[in-house]
Length: 210
Length: 404
Image (spheres, rainbow over the protein chains, first blue to last red):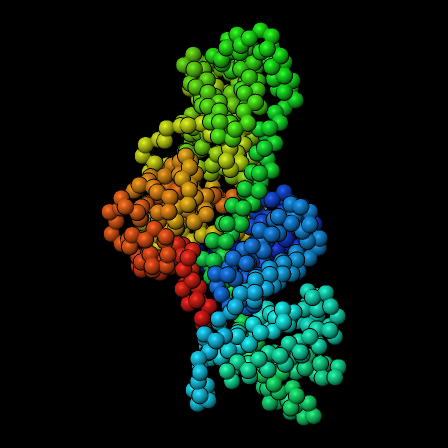
């Protein structure tokens, strides 16, 4: 016990000497220098790619999974976004400044492509998963069922409405951040999110009544 | 109307900050009727929030990405090395082509037994380049490249036999790293401070090219060791027996997969460290295992579940058949390649005598469920550990994680 407390004091006193060990800070600091990161990325440097992946994959995955209600498809798309990053950087078409913005935009485009492909095929999800029920049963549906209804309603929105809701409510971005990602003015986002939420609530009502 | 959009944004921020819906609406009695369903929808939209991906998903896709990057790197560098030999060699080669047509093959034939240091040795190497240059069939080319790599080892064996010092170069897999030196393609290589090592760490299982000097003791003093890209031609070397004897300087505990619970916390993957630490020549791999479908079988490299698995040092149990289910135990190299220590063919179709299998070569969720049961018995440690590495096709786990 004595030696343990001694060690702590030592570390505390010589705190500055230990700074380099806190690799979290160093890691993000080095990723913040985007021009250097892009140069290393162009060289396909494994450590840089690993660091970018570690920092952004969870967020990209959460975005994709919010928009697509399927674990394995969401995983494939999220993974594909990073492969596309490597391919784009190799062709010098990758992000110039905002790496995270590029990743989210690519994720959004890939999701849109996937959904368009699905729309072309007849979807059975709605009819199959919404059996007839009387109103008393609806009152008792658990929260999981409610989430499922929201998901079905969400899938009926336009791709842009889905995108804005995923950023604002899936990832919790602020109005300004969302405006940045969509390359629009804050007022336009206010109107867009208003319409998206109104449409969502309308669709929830429709799904509920089917 | 714009006003309503602005009010909605204010209300959304209030709700976000934990203010009750009714309290928020009471502040805007005129707009309350219109705002209520919109705010209700925002609360519904938040119900769909998904948690971060499971560590399994993160690790699996990380390996895939790094592997893809390694392939891209190899594609960039490999053709350049082979198709465009240095100008000097090309000049000699063109000269040789002329000589060939003018004076027959006598000079070339005379050079065929030349050893490094002999005056005819450069003729021999240039002739090899010519032969490669004029071979257009990919398979024949590969066979020729391997033959030439074999020739390098034969030359070194001859140099050792005669005790002659000479400058040599050869390729091979690193099979051992300890204080006596490294074993590469069954040749003992002395790596010293003067040795020019690559920026990345060189692990056991890595394919490398060694440039160095032979001496009378039957060892090569390495001047330079380079990592080879994936798919480079390697000589055919008899696999050392007893692969269990693979030695790594430190720490020994990591090579006891039976004892997972006691594995030190320091060996768990900490990617942040990777970007700041200077690479050391010997790293300490973390033993992991995964299960999947055997997609392809090569001489040194198999693919299991689309992951490249170096099998040079692996102890292989069972008969490998493409489509069979295999369990690989080993470690990942920084470039995403998995170096196997042990591979077990769990279900190889007709010729299997295994216990748990369903004779299901497709490797669907059924077999995964079985392996899950087995795994759970010894995976009660941290979520970064070795549990459930094998669920590529099985989403049940992720559902469980996300459900809460």
